[in-house]
Length: 96
Image 1 (tube, rainbow, N blue to C red):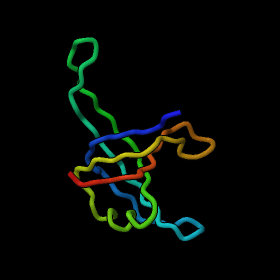
Image 2 (cartoon, rainbow, N blue to C red):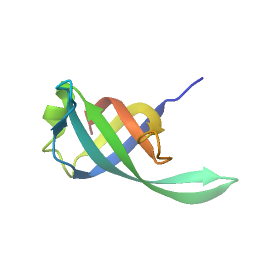
Image 3 (tube, rainbow, N blue to C red):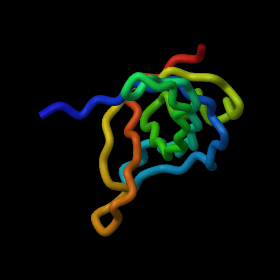
């Protein structure tokens, strides 16, 4: 099954860099997207905010990039086992 999300967004907020018990850096980003889409022949203003997680060495590089515009690719999963809130696990991120 496919689970791939590609999104252009504004980094609204960056949380403090933290580390997993294994020592891997983890950075939580809060992304905001707004665009005009077409649905059933009508223009629709699509707005969404989404929590995203960036792990590994890229987390260090993005910890001071609040207010940047980015293009991200990754997959969606629940925040944790007892939560139904989706989180985007970023696999690729590029500033635009």
